[in-house]
View (tube, rainbow, N blue to C red):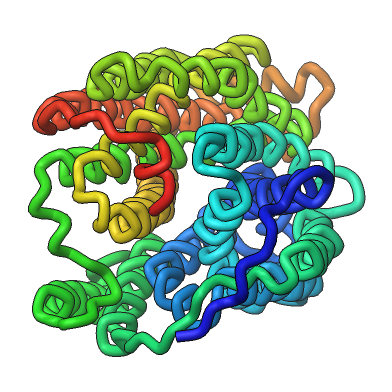
Length: 511
């Protein structure tokens, strides 16, 4: 083992500099999970793929990021926090640049995967850096800085993504990361010089890692390509399903019997942790699916530009920013299960509200749902983190945080793939149903021609009306399904025992 010599604690401008850079790094990585949401139609159109295929840009990043999170603990022990952070940050910038240069959709997804691999370690190492520079009595202040970037990033992401897509082009969604990432890496290496954390040689569970990548990757590809290949009518999809299932079972067996598992599955013996991760994974998956679906619906069906779709989605975080410090301050004084119930049930009511939308819905009708949902977000995210991290032993906190984050991001990726496929399938079925119910279509076309349209324009107008209504009915139905998902997981929250209070530093330190 080697360790840097003790140096005076950072103070003044150096302390503020490291805090700002660490928080900014987390902001940028979280931003990249949402900035591409409103850019999907632009990317799909530019690279000649369908909007549902375009969502691979989002899901590939999320899954890749999730896979590397469990590796962060080993990387930090082996190479040191600052080195891991700097390399990951630099790699994030490099692959962001390559994403923007991608001439084909396949290359974009490949570089997006690599960007996600680099982004995974940044989230926990940025938090570790903040905890290492602030004295113990100011741990809550450090976590407040870190948490605020997590709340603010989803606000800025859709808005910035829309402006860049409608302006200089979708590639700038990725190019914008490059100077920021390189600047953060250089700044941290300079300000933290000589302060590297202790390193030691620790074995890595290569078999476990390989099995993790195998089953998660196979499952994600199966979900992404299922509709395109007609699901289980395709030998490819069947093969991927078998590989994912066998890989998952093998992963469970190996990790439960390995002396140095890459993912410590033994923490699932804690009932509170189990309830917490189920609600976190399912709830965040439903939330993220709606965050992707609504902007997609606004652009492909109601004619919104990416900028205006981004302005709607950005309202998600306005009240979240206001409520976050309040919720964090009082969360420890109330039953965390009650706080979590408020957040999840609130998002269920928002989904139910959206299930009543029609094609006549106004900008403000949609915007209000995002604004009110922002009030529910802190209750859900803050309490979910507290429930999962306070339900395990202190020495298991790091493993609990990594596994919870992995399941959360994987849940988001999987649910997005499933919901966009379901959304398109329902729209197709509804379109067929509506066409069969059309009364006097020739008469409608003749009426439109009489108003000055050509026969081709009249046919196109009628087709557009039918398609818009079909997509609207599909969107309402998906939102109704999401409503029940939110309401059902409220019951799971109460399977957890009331967690015992724990100092903030203990919980946060292992995140």
